Image (tube, rainbow, N blue to C red; front, side, top):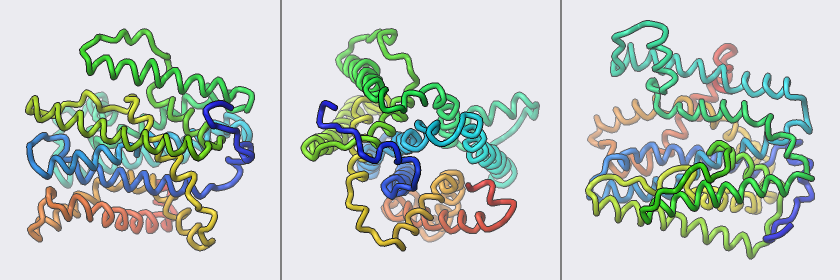
Amino acid sequence: MGYGIKPSSTSNKHNDKRLLYLDTLNIVAIIAVLLMHHNGNVHSFSQSSSWITSLAVETVFYFAVPVFIMITGATLLGYRQKYDTKTYFKKRFAKVLIPSIAWMIIMFCWHVFIRKDLAITDWSPASILNIFTASRENTVYYYLFVILGLYLTIPLFAPLAEKKYRKLLWYGVVAFFVFNALLPNLSALVGINYNSDFSVRIGSYVVYLFLGYLLSTAKIQKKYRILLYLGGVLAIIWRYTTTLNASFAHGYLVKTTWGYTQFHTIILASAVYVFVKNLPLDKVSEKAKAILAKLASCSFGIYLCHMMVMYYEGGVLKRLGLPTGSWIYRFLCPFLTYALCVGLVLILKKIPFLRRIVP
Protein backbone atom coordinates (compact mmCIF):
# COMPACT_ATOMS: atom_id res chain seq x y z
CA MET A 1 0.00 0.00 0.00
CA GLY A 2 1.17 3.59 -0.62
CA TYR A 3 2.90 6.00 1.72
CA GLY A 4 5.25 3.36 3.09
CA ILE A 5 2.45 1.39 4.71
CA LYS A 6 2.26 -2.31 4.15
CA PRO A 7 -0.21 -4.86 5.50
CA SER A 8 1.20 -6.70 8.48
CA SER A 9 1.80 -10.40 8.05
CA THR A 10 0.08 -10.91 11.40
CA SER A 11 -2.87 -8.66 10.62
CA ASN A 12 -5.37 -11.51 10.71
CA LYS A 13 -4.12 -12.72 14.06
CA HIS A 14 -3.64 -9.51 16.01
CA ASN A 15 -6.84 -10.05 17.98
CA ASP A 16 -6.09 -13.69 18.79
CA LYS A 17 -3.47 -13.01 21.41
CA ARG A 18 -2.54 -10.32 23.86
CA LEU A 19 -0.10 -7.90 22.26
CA LEU A 20 2.50 -6.38 24.54
CA TYR A 21 2.55 -3.04 22.77
CA LEU A 22 -1.17 -2.59 23.48
CA ASP A 23 -0.58 -3.30 27.17
CA THR A 24 2.26 -0.78 27.13
CA LEU A 25 0.11 1.84 25.40
CA ASN A 26 -2.62 1.20 27.93
CA ILE A 27 -0.26 1.89 30.83
CA VAL A 28 1.32 4.92 29.17
CA ALA A 29 -2.12 6.41 28.42
CA ILE A 30 -3.46 6.07 31.97
CA ILE A 31 -0.29 7.63 33.41
CA ALA A 32 -0.74 10.46 30.90
CA VAL A 33 -4.28 10.94 32.23
CA LEU A 34 -2.96 11.18 35.79
CA LEU A 35 -0.29 13.68 34.79
CA MET A 36 -2.88 15.92 33.13
CA HIS A 37 -5.31 15.70 36.03
CA HIS A 38 -2.56 16.58 38.52
CA ASN A 39 -1.89 19.64 36.38
CA GLY A 40 -5.50 20.76 36.21
CA ASN A 41 -4.50 24.34 37.01
CA VAL A 42 -3.82 24.70 33.28
CA HIS A 43 -7.53 25.48 32.92
CA SER A 44 -7.15 28.61 35.08
CA PHE A 45 -4.91 31.00 33.18
CA SER A 46 -2.20 32.95 34.94
CA GLN A 47 1.14 34.36 33.88
CA SER A 48 2.97 32.07 36.28
CA SER A 49 5.60 29.37 35.88
CA SER A 50 3.10 26.91 37.36
CA TRP A 51 0.60 27.57 34.55
CA ILE A 52 3.28 27.57 31.86
CA THR A 53 4.63 24.18 32.95
CA SER A 54 1.13 22.77 33.39
CA LEU A 55 0.39 23.80 29.81
CA ALA A 56 3.46 21.84 28.73
CA VAL A 57 2.16 18.73 30.54
CA GLU A 58 -1.31 19.18 29.06
CA THR A 59 0.13 19.52 25.57
CA VAL A 60 2.62 16.65 25.69
CA PHE A 61 0.20 14.11 27.21
CA TYR A 62 -2.94 15.11 25.34
CA PHE A 63 -2.74 11.87 23.38
CA ALA A 64 -4.19 9.85 26.27
CA VAL A 65 -7.87 9.66 25.31
CA PRO A 66 -7.22 9.25 21.55
CA VAL A 67 -4.77 6.42 22.28
CA PHE A 68 -7.29 4.65 24.52
CA ILE A 69 -9.80 4.81 21.67
CA MET A 70 -7.17 3.61 19.19
CA ILE A 71 -6.58 0.59 21.43
CA THR A 72 -10.33 -0.04 21.36
CA GLY A 73 -10.28 0.09 17.57
CA ALA A 74 -7.28 -2.22 17.38
CA THR A 75 -8.89 -4.84 19.60
CA LEU A 76 -12.57 -4.58 18.69
CA LEU A 77 -13.11 -3.35 15.14
CA GLY A 78 -12.34 -6.86 13.89
CA TYR A 79 -14.47 -8.63 16.50
CA ARG A 80 -16.48 -10.45 13.79
CA GLN A 81 -13.43 -12.65 13.18
CA LYS A 82 -13.93 -14.06 16.69
CA TYR A 83 -17.61 -13.96 17.63
CA ASP A 84 -21.02 -12.64 16.61
CA THR A 85 -22.47 -9.23 17.43
CA LYS A 86 -24.67 -10.56 20.24
CA THR A 87 -21.61 -11.92 22.02
CA TYR A 88 -19.77 -8.66 21.33
CA PHE A 89 -22.44 -6.60 23.09
CA LYS A 90 -22.65 -9.04 25.97
CA LYS A 91 -18.89 -8.89 26.54
CA ARG A 92 -18.52 -5.12 26.11
CA PHE A 93 -21.38 -3.89 28.20
CA ALA A 94 -20.86 -6.44 30.95
CA LYS A 95 -17.27 -5.24 31.23
CA VAL A 96 -17.92 -1.50 31.05
CA LEU A 97 -21.60 -0.71 31.71
CA ILE A 98 -21.84 -2.37 35.12
CA PRO A 99 -18.63 -0.80 36.51
CA SER A 100 -19.64 2.58 35.05
CA ILE A 101 -23.03 2.60 36.75
CA ALA A 102 -21.52 1.37 40.01
CA TRP A 103 -18.84 4.08 40.12
CA MET A 104 -21.25 6.81 39.08
CA ILE A 105 -23.36 5.90 42.13
CA ILE A 106 -20.30 5.62 44.37
CA MET A 107 -19.00 9.04 43.32
CA PHE A 108 -22.46 10.59 43.64
CA CYS A 109 -22.81 9.34 47.22
CA TRP A 110 -19.25 10.37 48.03
CA HIS A 111 -19.79 13.94 46.85
CA VAL A 112 -23.25 14.32 48.37
CA PHE A 113 -22.83 12.60 51.75
CA ILE A 114 -19.09 12.63 52.51
CA ARG A 115 -17.52 15.62 50.77
CA LYS A 116 -20.86 17.47 50.76
CA ASP A 117 -19.81 19.57 47.79
CA LEU A 118 -22.68 18.48 45.54
CA ALA A 119 -25.85 20.09 46.84
CA ILE A 120 -29.10 18.43 45.80
CA THR A 121 -32.18 20.63 46.05
CA ASP A 122 -34.38 18.53 43.80
CA TRP A 123 -34.38 14.80 44.43
CA SER A 124 -36.72 13.99 41.59
CA PRO A 125 -35.65 11.10 39.33
CA ALA A 126 -35.18 13.44 36.36
CA SER A 127 -32.99 15.84 38.36
CA ILE A 128 -30.81 13.04 39.72
CA LEU A 129 -30.50 11.44 36.30
CA ASN A 130 -29.42 14.79 34.85
CA ILE A 131 -26.52 14.86 37.31
CA PHE A 132 -25.26 11.58 35.91
CA THR A 133 -25.83 12.41 32.25
CA ALA A 134 -23.91 15.69 32.73
CA SER A 135 -21.14 13.86 34.67
CA ARG A 136 -21.54 16.26 37.58
CA GLU A 137 -20.79 13.47 40.04
CA ASN A 138 -17.33 13.26 38.44
CA THR A 139 -16.44 15.42 35.45
CA VAL A 140 -13.93 12.92 34.06
CA TYR A 141 -16.70 10.35 33.66
CA TYR A 142 -17.67 11.99 30.38
CA TYR A 143 -15.41 9.35 28.84
CA LEU A 144 -17.78 6.60 29.98
CA PHE A 145 -20.43 7.94 27.63
CA VAL A 146 -17.83 8.29 24.88
CA ILE A 147 -16.69 4.68 25.10
CA LEU A 148 -20.21 3.28 25.46
CA GLY A 149 -21.26 5.28 22.41
CA LEU A 150 -18.31 3.90 20.48
CA TYR A 151 -19.32 0.38 21.48
CA LEU A 152 -22.72 1.08 19.93
CA THR A 153 -21.01 2.37 16.80
CA ILE A 154 -18.39 -0.33 16.21
CA PRO A 155 -20.78 -2.96 14.72
CA LEU A 156 -21.66 -0.48 11.95
CA PHE A 157 -18.03 -0.35 10.81
CA ALA A 158 -16.90 -3.85 11.80
CA PRO A 159 -17.46 -5.27 8.27
CA LEU A 160 -14.81 -2.81 7.03
CA ALA A 161 -12.20 -4.65 9.11
CA GLU A 162 -11.92 -7.19 6.30
CA LYS A 163 -8.66 -6.79 4.42
CA LYS A 164 -10.38 -5.93 1.14
CA TYR A 165 -11.84 -2.78 2.74
CA ARG A 166 -8.56 -1.55 4.26
CA LYS A 167 -8.18 1.23 1.66
CA LEU A 168 -11.73 2.39 2.39
CA LEU A 169 -10.84 2.81 6.05
CA TRP A 170 -7.72 4.75 5.08
CA TYR A 171 -9.91 6.97 2.94
CA GLY A 172 -12.07 7.66 5.98
CA VAL A 173 -9.03 8.63 8.05
CA VAL A 174 -7.50 10.88 5.38
CA ALA A 175 -10.78 12.56 4.48
CA PHE A 176 -11.60 13.17 8.15
CA PHE A 177 -8.12 14.58 8.75
CA VAL A 178 -8.42 17.05 5.86
CA PHE A 179 -12.06 18.14 6.05
CA ASN A 180 -12.86 17.70 9.75
CA ALA A 181 -9.53 18.38 11.42
CA LEU A 182 -7.16 20.40 9.26
CA LEU A 183 -9.25 22.85 7.22
CA PRO A 184 -11.68 23.88 10.03
CA ASN A 185 -8.84 24.46 12.50
CA LEU A 186 -6.67 26.44 10.11
CA SER A 187 -9.70 28.46 9.03
CA ALA A 188 -10.45 29.40 12.64
CA LEU A 189 -6.89 30.59 13.14
CA VAL A 190 -7.06 32.98 10.18
CA GLY A 191 -10.60 34.15 10.89
CA ILE A 192 -12.45 32.26 8.16
CA ASN A 193 -15.83 30.69 8.98
CA TYR A 194 -15.50 27.14 7.72
CA ASN A 195 -18.78 25.54 6.67
CA SER A 196 -18.96 22.38 8.78
CA ASP A 197 -21.43 20.83 6.34
CA PHE A 198 -18.43 20.26 4.07
CA SER A 199 -17.03 17.43 6.18
CA VAL A 200 -17.05 13.68 6.67
CA ARG A 201 -20.15 12.79 8.67
CA ILE A 202 -18.75 10.44 11.27
CA GLY A 203 -18.36 11.14 14.97
CA SER A 204 -15.19 12.90 16.07
CA TYR A 205 -13.90 9.86 17.99
CA VAL A 206 -14.59 7.30 15.26
CA VAL A 207 -11.48 8.31 13.32
CA TYR A 208 -9.41 6.99 16.22
CA LEU A 209 -11.16 3.62 16.01
CA PHE A 210 -10.14 3.47 12.35
CA LEU A 211 -6.58 4.61 13.07
CA GLY A 212 -6.08 2.13 15.90
CA TYR A 213 -7.18 -0.77 13.75
CA LEU A 214 -5.27 0.33 10.66
CA LEU A 215 -2.02 1.03 12.50
CA SER A 216 -2.30 -2.31 14.30
CA THR A 217 -2.55 -4.13 10.98
CA ALA A 218 0.10 -2.23 9.04
CA LYS A 219 3.87 -1.99 8.93
CA ILE A 220 5.22 1.49 8.33
CA GLN A 221 8.69 1.88 6.88
CA LYS A 222 11.25 3.44 9.19
CA LYS A 223 11.71 6.63 7.17
CA TYR A 224 7.97 7.32 7.35
CA ARG A 225 7.89 6.52 11.05
CA ILE A 226 10.61 9.10 11.61
CA LEU A 227 8.55 11.66 9.71
CA LEU A 228 5.54 10.79 11.85
CA TYR A 229 7.57 11.19 15.06
CA LEU A 230 8.81 14.56 13.82
CA GLY A 231 5.20 15.47 13.11
CA GLY A 232 4.29 14.51 16.68
CA VAL A 233 6.99 16.81 18.08
CA LEU A 234 5.89 19.66 15.81
CA ALA A 235 2.28 19.04 16.86
CA ILE A 236 3.26 19.54 20.52
CA ILE A 237 5.20 22.70 19.70
CA TRP A 238 2.34 24.04 17.58
CA ARG A 239 -0.35 23.63 20.22
CA TYR A 240 1.87 24.83 23.04
CA THR A 241 3.13 27.98 21.35
CA THR A 242 -0.23 28.99 19.87
CA THR A 243 -1.98 28.53 23.23
CA LEU A 244 0.78 30.27 25.17
CA ASN A 245 1.03 33.27 22.85
CA ALA A 246 -2.72 33.74 22.39
CA SER A 247 -3.45 33.36 26.11
CA PHE A 248 -0.79 35.89 27.11
CA ALA A 249 -2.02 38.29 24.44
CA HIS A 250 -5.68 38.11 25.53
CA GLY A 251 -5.22 37.63 29.27
CA TYR A 252 -7.31 34.46 29.44
CA LEU A 253 -7.00 30.84 28.34
CA VAL A 254 -7.49 30.62 24.57
CA LYS A 255 -8.47 27.13 23.41
CA THR A 256 -8.55 27.65 19.65
CA THR A 257 -6.05 24.82 19.13
CA TRP A 258 -7.59 22.48 21.73
CA GLY A 259 -9.74 19.47 20.96
CA TYR A 260 -9.51 15.86 19.83
CA THR A 261 -10.56 16.74 16.28
CA GLN A 262 -7.57 19.03 15.85
CA PHE A 263 -5.18 17.86 13.15
CA HIS A 264 -2.18 18.07 15.45
CA THR A 265 -3.91 15.86 18.04
CA ILE A 266 -4.43 13.15 15.43
CA ILE A 267 -0.76 13.40 14.43
CA LEU A 268 0.46 13.27 18.04
CA ALA A 269 -1.71 10.27 18.98
CA SER A 270 -0.65 8.40 15.85
CA ALA A 271 3.02 9.13 16.53
CA VAL A 272 2.79 7.82 20.11
CA TYR A 273 0.90 4.72 18.97
CA VAL A 274 3.38 3.87 16.22
CA PHE A 275 6.39 4.64 18.42
CA VAL A 276 5.28 2.25 21.17
CA LYS A 277 4.26 -0.40 18.66
CA ASN A 278 7.76 -0.38 17.19
CA LEU A 279 9.65 -0.62 20.47
CA PRO A 280 11.71 -3.84 20.78
CA LEU A 281 9.22 -5.32 23.23
CA ASP A 282 9.88 -8.84 21.96
CA LYS A 283 13.05 -8.77 24.07
CA VAL A 284 11.07 -8.30 27.29
CA SER A 285 11.17 -11.25 29.68
CA GLU A 286 8.10 -13.38 30.29
CA LYS A 287 7.92 -12.12 33.87
CA ALA A 288 7.95 -8.51 32.68
CA LYS A 289 5.24 -9.31 30.13
CA ALA A 290 3.07 -10.75 32.89
CA ILE A 291 3.59 -7.66 35.02
CA LEU A 292 2.71 -5.35 32.14
CA ALA A 293 -0.40 -7.39 31.39
CA LYS A 294 -1.45 -7.19 35.05
CA LEU A 295 -0.90 -3.43 35.18
CA ALA A 296 -2.74 -2.90 31.90
CA SER A 297 -5.72 -4.83 33.25
CA CYS A 298 -5.96 -2.26 36.05
CA SER A 299 -6.18 0.82 33.82
CA PHE A 300 -9.97 1.06 33.61
CA GLY A 301 -10.27 0.60 37.36
CA ILE A 302 -7.60 3.29 37.87
CA TYR A 303 -9.56 5.67 35.69
CA LEU A 304 -12.73 5.01 37.70
CA CYS A 305 -11.22 5.58 41.14
CA HIS A 306 -8.30 7.97 40.65
CA MET A 307 -10.14 11.23 41.36
CA MET A 308 -11.10 9.96 44.79
CA VAL A 309 -7.53 8.86 45.50
CA MET A 310 -6.21 12.22 44.30
CA TYR A 311 -8.56 14.05 46.67
CA TYR A 312 -7.27 12.29 49.78
CA GLU A 313 -3.72 12.41 48.50
CA GLY A 314 -4.01 16.18 48.08
CA GLY A 315 -5.42 16.51 51.60
CA VAL A 316 -2.42 14.72 53.09
CA LEU A 317 0.00 16.89 51.13
CA LYS A 318 -1.72 20.09 52.27
CA ARG A 319 -1.28 19.03 55.89
CA LEU A 320 2.39 18.58 55.05
CA GLY A 321 2.53 22.10 53.66
CA LEU A 322 2.53 21.03 50.00
CA PRO A 323 -0.36 22.58 48.04
CA THR A 324 -1.76 21.03 44.89
CA GLY A 325 0.11 23.64 42.89
CA SER A 326 3.47 22.38 44.13
CA TRP A 327 5.95 20.61 41.87
CA ILE A 328 5.79 17.49 44.05
CA TYR A 329 2.03 17.20 43.61
CA ARG A 330 2.07 17.97 39.91
CA PHE A 331 5.04 15.87 38.79
CA LEU A 332 5.68 13.17 41.41
CA CYS A 333 2.22 12.46 42.78
CA PRO A 334 0.83 11.20 39.47
CA PHE A 335 3.06 8.17 39.92
CA LEU A 336 2.09 7.84 43.58
CA THR A 337 -1.57 8.02 42.54
CA TYR A 338 -0.91 5.32 39.96
CA ALA A 339 0.68 3.03 42.56
CA LEU A 340 -2.12 3.60 45.08
CA CYS A 341 -4.81 3.01 42.48
CA VAL A 342 -3.14 -0.16 41.23
CA GLY A 343 -3.06 -1.45 44.81
CA LEU A 344 -6.70 -0.55 45.37
CA VAL A 345 -7.85 -2.14 42.11
CA LEU A 346 -5.90 -5.34 42.72
CA ILE A 347 -7.45 -5.62 46.18
CA LEU A 348 -10.96 -5.07 44.81
CA LYS A 349 -10.32 -7.67 42.13
CA LYS A 350 -9.82 -10.27 44.86
CA ILE A 351 -13.17 -9.58 46.53
CA PRO A 352 -15.90 -11.72 44.88
CA PHE A 353 -18.69 -9.14 44.73
CA LEU A 354 -16.58 -6.02 44.24
CA ARG A 355 -14.41 -7.46 41.47
CA ARG A 356 -17.24 -6.70 39.02
CA ILE A 357 -16.73 -2.94 39.43
CA VAL A 358 -13.03 -3.07 38.46
CA PRO A 359 -12.93 -5.43 35.44
